[in-house]
Image (cartoon, rainbow, N blue to C red; front, top):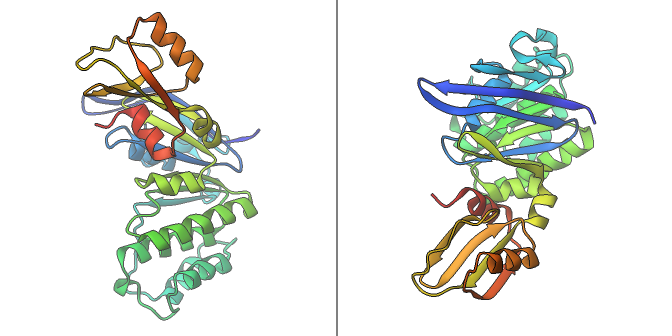
Length: 294
């Protein structure tokens, strides 16, 4: 499968603080990939590297087979980039800003823009300065969709939207990307949105990629385990148990191991337990379970 994005051995520092080291990943054509991570793990750094705004200390980032720092400007125009949902020229109306941007893009598809504006129930004559933060972010997204780029890079794409409009846009973006065979790389702090939208996910921990796999595979394999142990019991370190926490005599952990494998591991370690319970989780619980609550 053709990779639209290939990052190899990315390393970056801010001052003396290491953000990550030797980070490598790829995004195949036609897939929607969500980047998840706590604050400070390097999500925005990665977006800035993909956009060419930031040169990493080491490593390379290729998009459409070209290194992003030296990409042909004609090819760069095939990347639609949204950083924090900002729109310039807020004195313009919905209609005026569409006409303004259309003059810069030969492949402009105004239908994609106006379809989204209609779903948001904003009139063509409405001035952008009088819109909410969430509506302005969707105007920016509509303008990016109208550019008709092959790759969309969206940072915090649902910023400022209420739950109803978030759901509307998530469904709209997924249908659009599928119908047009677009590749999408995005971040969001609202993980419920990601679960409805993405094909693949990268979960970043501090300094590394913790998980990269299809969302369906992740949610089919990761499990939350709870078990009863003697109160005050000190659990030994057990491989493949993520961030075990103990509240009184109830132990909670997350793992990719099956229930049988967990039982075997507990017995091998001599853990005095009872009432082992396994349950499937949603993406938000999986993210917190695999990266830790704090």
